[in-house]
Length: 94
Image (tube, rainbow, N blue to C red):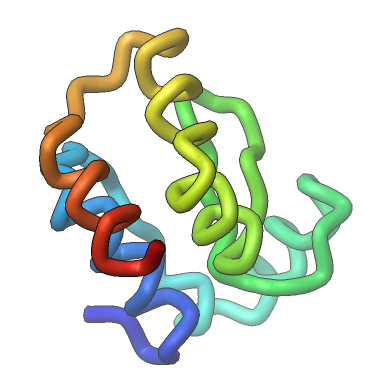
Protein backbone atom coordinates (compact mmCIF):
# COMPACT_ATOMS: atom_id res chain seq x y z
CA UNK A 1 0.00 0.00 0.00
CA UNK A 2 1.67 3.26 -1.12
CA UNK A 3 2.28 5.64 1.76
CA UNK A 4 2.49 8.86 -0.24
CA UNK A 5 0.75 10.43 -3.21
CA UNK A 6 3.77 10.12 -5.48
CA UNK A 7 4.13 6.39 -4.83
CA UNK A 8 0.40 5.98 -5.22
CA UNK A 9 0.50 7.70 -8.62
CA UNK A 10 3.31 5.48 -9.94
CA UNK A 11 1.68 2.31 -8.59
CA UNK A 12 -1.65 3.46 -10.04
CA UNK A 13 -0.16 3.93 -13.51
CA UNK A 14 1.53 0.54 -13.42
CA UNK A 15 -1.59 -1.18 -12.10
CA UNK A 16 -3.84 0.51 -14.67
CA UNK A 17 -1.46 -0.52 -17.46
CA UNK A 18 -1.48 -4.09 -16.16
CA UNK A 19 2.25 -4.18 -15.44
CA UNK A 20 3.41 -6.94 -13.14
CA UNK A 21 5.74 -5.25 -10.63
CA UNK A 22 7.28 -5.67 -7.21
CA UNK A 23 7.48 -2.95 -4.60
CA UNK A 24 9.69 -2.37 -1.59
CA UNK A 25 8.64 -0.31 1.42
CA UNK A 26 11.81 1.74 1.83
CA UNK A 27 10.20 3.73 4.64
CA UNK A 28 10.37 0.67 6.88
CA UNK A 29 14.18 0.82 7.06
CA UNK A 30 16.14 4.09 7.02
CA UNK A 31 19.26 2.30 5.74
CA UNK A 32 17.36 0.90 2.75
CA UNK A 33 15.74 4.28 2.12
CA UNK A 34 19.10 6.05 2.05
CA UNK A 35 20.76 3.15 0.23
CA UNK A 36 18.37 3.33 -2.72
CA UNK A 37 18.94 7.07 -3.00
CA UNK A 38 22.70 6.55 -2.96
CA UNK A 39 22.50 3.66 -5.44
CA UNK A 40 20.52 5.63 -8.02
CA UNK A 41 22.00 9.04 -7.20
CA UNK A 42 18.37 10.21 -7.08
CA UNK A 43 17.21 12.12 -3.98
CA UNK A 44 13.57 11.06 -3.77
CA UNK A 45 11.26 8.07 -3.66
CA UNK A 46 9.48 6.41 -5.33
CA UNK A 47 12.00 5.17 -7.84
CA UNK A 48 11.04 3.02 -10.79
CA UNK A 49 13.41 0.39 -12.13
CA UNK A 50 12.59 -1.60 -15.27
CA UNK A 51 14.54 -4.83 -15.65
CA UNK A 52 17.21 -3.42 -13.33
CA UNK A 53 17.50 -0.06 -15.11
CA UNK A 54 16.71 3.06 -13.09
CA UNK A 55 14.02 5.06 -14.89
CA UNK A 56 13.20 7.90 -12.49
CA UNK A 57 10.76 9.16 -9.96
CA UNK A 58 7.10 10.08 -10.11
CA UNK A 59 7.47 13.16 -12.34
CA UNK A 60 9.63 11.31 -14.87
CA UNK A 61 7.30 8.30 -14.91
CA UNK A 62 4.33 10.63 -15.41
CA UNK A 63 6.04 12.48 -18.28
CA UNK A 64 7.12 9.21 -19.91
CA UNK A 65 3.60 7.81 -19.63
CA UNK A 66 2.05 10.87 -21.24
CA UNK A 67 4.62 11.05 -24.05
CA UNK A 68 4.51 7.33 -24.83
CA UNK A 69 8.16 6.85 -23.86
CA UNK A 70 7.19 4.43 -21.10
CA UNK A 71 5.39 2.25 -23.67
CA UNK A 72 8.55 2.21 -25.78
CA UNK A 73 10.71 1.33 -22.78
CA UNK A 74 8.37 -1.50 -21.80
CA UNK A 75 8.36 -2.83 -25.37
CA UNK A 76 12.16 -2.63 -25.61
CA UNK A 77 12.62 -4.40 -22.27
CA UNK A 78 9.98 -7.05 -22.97
CA UNK A 79 7.62 -5.90 -20.23
CA UNK A 80 3.99 -6.85 -20.82
CA UNK A 81 1.53 -3.98 -20.50
CA UNK A 82 -1.91 -3.01 -21.74
CA UNK A 83 -1.36 -0.58 -24.64
CA UNK A 84 -5.05 0.38 -24.68
CA UNK A 85 -4.86 1.34 -21.00
CA UNK A 86 -1.75 3.44 -21.69
CA UNK A 87 -3.59 5.17 -24.53
CA UNK A 88 -6.55 5.86 -22.21
CA UNK A 89 -4.22 7.57 -19.72
CA UNK A 90 -2.91 9.82 -22.48
CA UNK A 91 -6.41 10.49 -23.80
CA UNK A 92 -7.68 11.47 -20.35
CA UNK A 93 -4.71 13.81 -19.79
CA UNK A 94 -4.39 15.23 -23.31
